[in-house]
Amino acid sequence: MTASGAIGEAFYKDPERRALYLRVLEETGEKTLARHEAGVSVKVISWLRGKDPEFHDAEHEALRMYRAKHIASEIHRRAVVGTVREIYYNGVVVGHERVYSDALLKFHAQRHIAEYRDRLRVDQNTTTKHVVSLEQIEASLSPESRADLRRILEREAARAEESSPE
Image (tube, rainbow, N blue to C red; front, side):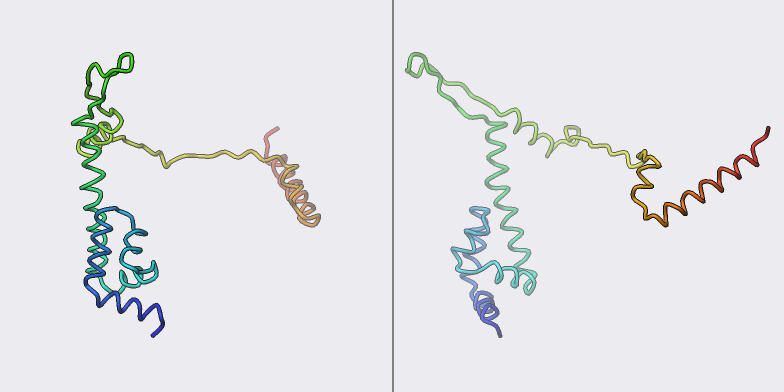
């Protein structure tokens, strides 16, 4: 067993360190900090994800909970509840006002109400027209290919003359 494999096995067999990693991940959303606190490397965590599907799921759940508890709740607070800001006049607090974030409210609404989601429509049936001159084509060809192209063009021009009504 390699040194990193032995460290991975030790981490795998230590439920307290795994729980610490997952707890810090849920509290901060920072994988680097969680690894540091648990004393484990990226390589070991990656190895453990592959070895233990339950750990993999627990890691995703910790990140989901971080987003729900911290990010989503802060968006809700600033967008829906609002924040109180002091109003100053001549350096003295003369009042307070509740301020809301319209941008965060828009994102919050888009998440929860389908009608507010941006709709991106992509037309996949597009045609692109590239105009290339005969000189550009000839310049990219070898001398032999250029001679072949001239013969083909002359032959096609002759056929077109023969088949055109007079």
